[in-house]
Length: 133
Image (cartoon, rainbow, N blue to C red; front, side, top):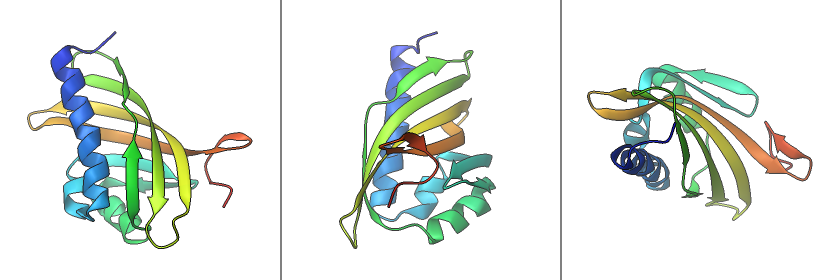
């Protein structure tokens, strides 16, 4: 099921904030995009809840996050499944990594929030949990 125009705009804005909060190192603003019990899978690891997201972000490199538009599939009135791509340019080294994300969203009184994220890197051998570098 396709999202309403209002939901598509709200979900697109959520992922724009996702990139921008990371770019300006606004960890708490980024964490606020997630539900308190959210799960994030990257590099073959799973991070649980807001505290897990804080720990993950503490060890992550800084840089520029360039996100493509999300593909939104509604899973009922208050749930959505998202597929999106992202190009990351690391600040210190200039190394780039490209990835495909799968997300699950929930509508809350505060708007759409992320319940689950899985990041897989685009490699010559296809999508992988770790980049080649």
